[in-house]
Amino acid sequence: MSSCTKRLKKLSLDSIGQASWQAPSNIALVKYWGKKEVQIPCNPSVSFTLKNCHTKTSIEWKPRKATIDNFQYSFLFEGKEAPDFHSKIDQFFEKLIEFIPELHSYEFKISSENSFPHSAGIASSASAMAALSLCLVSFEREMGLDLSEDQFYNRASFFARLGSGSACRSLYPEVACWGESEVIGNDLFALPFSQQLNEVFRNYQDSVVIVDSGVKSVSSRAGHALMNDHPFAMTRFEQASLNYRKCLEILKVGDLNSFINLVENEALTLHAMMMTSRENYMLMKPGTLEVIEKLRLYRSESNIPLCFTLDAGPNVHILYPKKHEEAVKKWISENISFKVIHDELGEGPINL
Ligand code: PMV
Image (tube, rainbow, N blue to C red; front, side):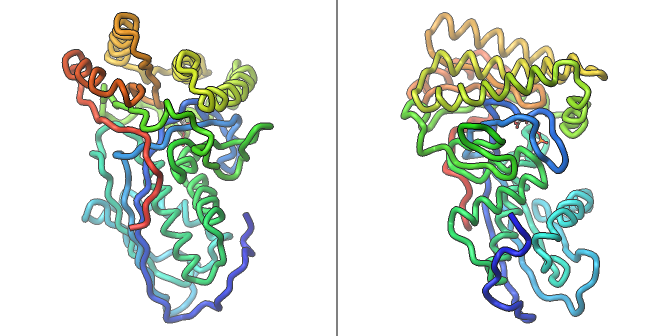
């Protein structure tokens, strides 16, 4: 991905325009945990793209009077000025300036909103970075950048990765994979996998149990950093690469028993890494274990192939096939006392 990608038009100094995109959140099946500079993952990962949990972002641009070495933008989050987000946007633009030099010669009005409550405990950085990246590639297109459809999404994924690693997987329908591997994938941007997806995973359900919606005690950034000198790091990266290959095969053939084993193992390994790092910590809460135990009991009694996965946090994602939707939702409403956000696999970003 180079900064000298072909620009067809010469920058027109009176070009005013706008772009709006909706981008979804995603949940990893094989987890990305540990990174090198700059947002290069230590192992490949694969995720489900969600549908209902998404961010809508619009940008408007107009030329600045002079090109100055800072960024000029306003940012509204859910209709209100949100200065707390400025340092994140500044850092993001700083990383993008070598690819989008026009960021210095235009001023932007950015506004963004999430479909899920900000304090729900669902990471919003993936959908937010993906939506903003799509708007910026639309801006580049208006500036004359010549991109095929695939190149458009790959470039947005490349930008989103620089904002937040896992965000690069939020650009594609249903399933996305990211990271160097001999099967499929590269470190710079994610790729779609849905064409190879087995029918049993179509419309797969994800009911997110919000065990705790508070701010995490240890950020993902600090968590990734603790993998640098983690005693199990090398073993973990090898295991994740193997699980990545296995997971893609499972997603192709539709083997649900292997899926359950692998996905739960990945979730618990992620948390095991946190519990065994130099500065150890625990993001699971008693409610997390309570939900997992109930789920395992229900699975053995009902034979319904549901399973769980976890993000870097206490909330439990309950994954199950569409055909069991009614039974599982009934079980959840009768047995889980926490708030639940029902989601499912989605079709990826939407140009609004
Ligand atoms: O994208 P980051 O830096 O917030 O890291 C996210 C890491 C996990 O969500 C725990 C795993 C993953 O692959 O999404």
